[in-house]
Image (cartoon, rainbow over all chains, first blue to last red):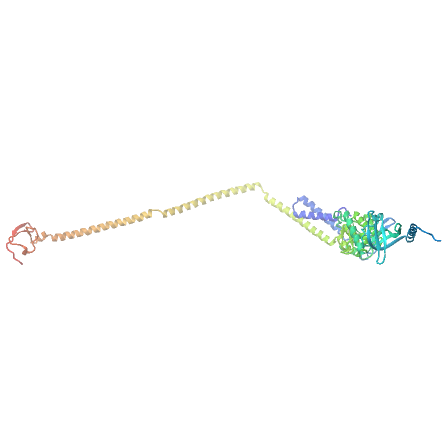
Amino acid sequence: MAKENFEAALEKLENIVKEMEAGEMPLDTALKSFEEGIRLIRFCSGKLEAAGRRVEMLLEKEASLEIKTFQDEDSDGQ
Amino acid sequence: MKEILTVSQLNDNIKTLLEEAFGQLYVEGEVSNLRRPQSGHTYFTLKDDKSQIRCVFFRPYGIRNVRFELEDGMKILCRARLSAYLPRGEYQLIVESLEPQGTGALQKAFEQLKARLAAEGLFDAAAKKPLPFLPARIGVVTSPTGAVIRDILNITRRRFPSIDILIAPARVQGEGAAAEIITSLRNLQLSGLVDIIIIARGGGSLEDLAAFNDEELAREIFRSSIPVVSAVGHETDFTICDFVADLRAPTPSAAAELVVPCRSDLLDTIYSLRQRLIAAQQRFFEDQKNALDTVRARFRDPRMFLADYSIKLDDLHDRLRNYFTHHTQALGHELRQLELRLQNRSPRRLIDEKRFLLDTMHKDLLGGWKRYHDGYTRRLNNDAALLASLNPLAVLQRGYSITRRESGDDIVRDASRLTLGERVRIQLAQGSFRASVEKILGE
């Protein structure tokens, strides 16, 4: 899990956009908000990057846990 | 040689025989004649359609091994030992554990467990953990084969292709299934790799879903620090697992949809927010620029104000003058109007008219008088001439005379009226004389 989670970032972004749209902030705050907004958009977009996923199995082996690739996912196409 | 036994000895022998011969038994049947005296032990009769047997369920077992309340008519499966009760010479089952059998009993047991856990607060909404909005890795406790895991994999991939899945395999039906599910759930928590767990199974009968009504599993779910979504059975199936989980999904597919956000929707949201942010930024700067322009337009050289004031002063001066001029003119006009009106009402004309009338009358009067005077003068003259012509004295001039009676002084116009000797006076043009009538001559 990332330190900054997607939902919080999205919520923050929504608030920034709303505040910017209200247009009642000082210039330097507006500049900072805009930069922060762009950063959040990059962060959120990054989280949405469509990279392949891992599907694995968690197994118990000799009293310890082991992770194996899940073989059955033939339809996943990865 | 016959051995004679006392009743006690016989029953004792029977008891030993029974206990050694049968050992541990599994017996199923229907509960009847249920009794629970002060001692806390439970007595009942287990029967089927042809036969019956007495049973006793001692309290220590009762507390540990039964998680539902027995009722008459309930079908149960008992693990028991056969024994004899010596004082009465009756044989009976000493029940060690029992579990409900059949839909009715299972349903009853389910309701009882549900009520008990609810009372303990295991289903409280306040205890529910919120689901992560966008999980990085999803733990799935289910059978690694079959439609359920396939549905979950398909739907999660379709909605958000980059979320990892960690499957903790467990049998979801049959003996020991509950224990396997608990172990897998525990393992997922221990791994520290997942931020949400789905417990899933397809639909089935109450017996099929029994593992998900297990009390230990319910407690394990309640203890889990990671949010758990229960997706057991079909929409209409409810299990204890559903109630205690942080979220209940009607089906495994629905669970996958609830846990994984739709990537394209999120992309749309972020794209739209990006557009709004940029638009707001641009508008913000335009507003700032406009505000600056407005201020700049309002900021001017103070000398300009002086010039303005000077112009304004002139203007006011002009206006003042114009005002007075105009006002004076207006007053003059008004005055003239009043004068005209006054003149129109002046008595002079009336006086003139009257004077004219008076003059005319005066002239008329004078004229009239003169005419009158002249007329009379003329008439007087005429009359005078006439008078003069009529003056008997004038006739006398022509030789006529007037004879008057002396006695009476009347003029004698008829000689016959005279008498002889009468005295008359005869007037002539020059003087008169007295005479006496001598003879009357007639005509």
